[in-house]
Amino acid sequence: NAGVTQTPKFQVLKTGQSMTLQCAQDMNHNSMYWYRQDPGMGLRLIYYSASEGTTDKGEVPNGYNVSRLNKREFSLRLESAAPSQTSVYFCASRLDRGNGYTFGSGTRLTVV
Amino acid sequence: GNSVTQMEGPVTLSEEAFLTINCTYTATGYPSLFWYVQYPGEGLQLLLKATKADDKGSNKGFEATYRKETTSFHLEKGSVQVSDSAVYFCALNSGGSNYKLTFGKGTLLTVNP
Image (tube, chains in turn yellow, red):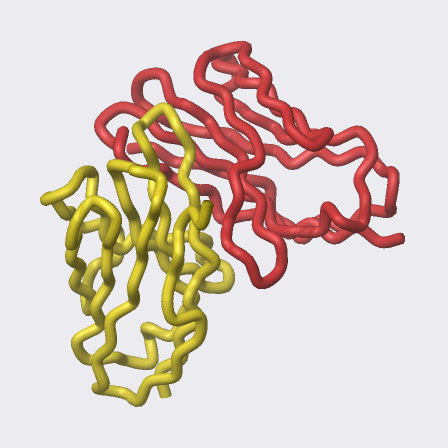
């Protein structure tokens, strides 16, 4: 039972480069989320997908795009990375609103 | 809108001490409340939850009671261990944000032997 799987675990990018963070869950959850975690800022929601086929902006969506490829997969794309996007990124999923999230183990991204 | 306020850390305790981490919230409707724990280098894990007033969530010796009259959900443990050292997050979902959890900023707990 893998839960939520994120790839890669670590990444270093140069300013202006693009990349896609991958997330997949095997729990048949309906909702999926992308958060970033920065020191002193807690968790901030970037984008979420309440159900397959829908996506919505969170608190800090600028500079990011997402794709809910199917019920299992929810990817986060940085089109032109900036040093301000250096962070730890977490993907999460949830069956429905009465339940908590299941988190992946995170992707540590550094933009130089 | 919804918000969660946690006591500022860091909190440093000796092993076997009593732990309280305060959490208060503002929310529309009747929120569900959660505590998450993040161990160093890992993602967040659900520790416990409560879905209605006066419910008590419990897990691994931790407890929290949903107090609607004081809009609080304080985390307690009677005797902490070194292995409890982690960051603890209080969270809620309610009302128009049913699809999203609102998190507090987290409280770092360090337990010394």
